[in-house]
Length: 383
Image (tube, rainbow, N blue to C red; front, side, top):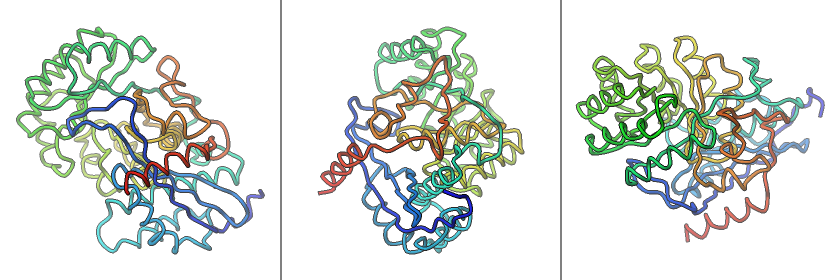
């Protein structure tokens, strides 16, 4: 397709998806035996199709209804290549402060529009971003589960190392004393040459976070992820003054203004937006560029998302100068292994590196049969 065509948007289709996990995942939040996302398909009058993904962990059909009722009517007839204008147009569907389901739904549309832009230009998305040029991005294995016995957690950690990962994430939670023991035992299990990080998923109050941070520092962990509620910005600043391990956060942020305070004052050493929550590629880029301007590292969060989240995150990571490392979930997840012709990152990673897709757009094609199966399960769960 010539670059000069308008590529007017003809349709926006929401695909709420659910699948049952082969093995449960456990964090300080709870135990998950199934996971949901939403795919967004955007079609143009010229025949181009792009796909994006929204973080729709619960009630995915509600996200679909939001796309159909609030976003689609605003987008039909607009140029798919006017990505920034379309982001602003969608944002006006919410009259209050930005956040929640609308921004997550917008993320799916935005990623799909970038996919179309790349396909229209015959280029991978990373090239359209005009940043760094990386063939591959460093990744860390995620995650050693919380809630399992120490022995099982140690086996998980050693398994990740045996698969070629030199960096691992360890889930921790309450009580702090048990977390401190887990921190020490995982370090002993993998040795001093493996990089370890710890993710608390908001498990602690300030005093417990200080206690846990002391164990992390003593055992050489690289960062302490989401120790406190994301709204507790003052708590993060106080913790930064009282601990010797770098702080990481950002997966709970929806927009740049939510990420900015702890980036601008360097409370955070690592910013971790999830592209399927943080308004898609457009808004995540703003966050990552702000972090770069303040010498804060960028480390994309992926978690229990799908292959489109992983691919979009790879493209942004390949372009950003401050990319430190990217999350690479290793638990079985059909959204990563079966939904597209690009295999899960944990299967493709070699020696701690994940190659960036080279095809046009996001560089993958959706398996329509798998899409139908997972959509049927989402409908079944809602019945």
